Image (cartoon, rainbow, N blue to C red; front, side, top):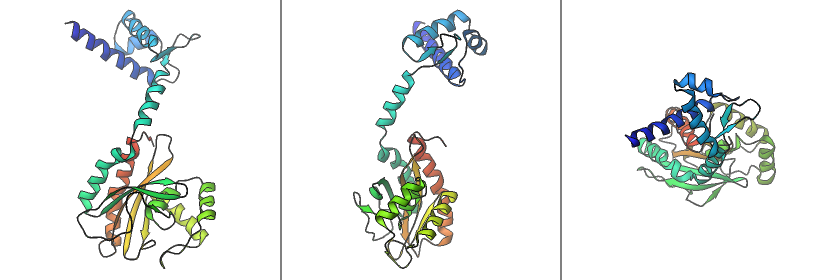
Length: 255
């Protein structure tokens, strides 16, 4: 019986926390009591305990209760502990299983992308990419997916430092055309590499955002032109965009 009551108390405390979190200006004891159908003395005891541990704060002027700063401490520790590779891996494996193509996960670093995960798929494909290797941003789908969501000043700085060197005859080397491409990518939610980095290889990528809403990574599917037709890319985007959203959500991103 004691254990049942203890669990019930925890349940009520969590319900109160959830209720208070929905109101920016906080709630009073009577409001909480009425909404939860619990007597005011019980509500007050629970609130007093939560205040003691920092999970709830009471406004000294209004007497209303709000979320406490303890939640910020806990959430910051959680966010610091999130590992991009481990959070993304189940979704990368899902893409690999669905497509049998090469799947890449990259992060943005100093004007370039760095491959941090590569799943080979079941189909044969020779690519220069490997975990730990750096690649340019302007001619890779992952790089363009990230660039499209960086502040414009950062993009211009990268273009000034790195330029738009030719990798294949399909590489976009005109700055104005490239900026228009980034605008289109941001609108569409995905980026393409149509043999712009390596001949015979086409890729589609989507950006990944962190809890601050900043673009930090991208995930892509790569395959030979014979398999990565326009029709297939159109189909793949319907899988890729939700995957990007799911991985971002695992990092704490809220659209």
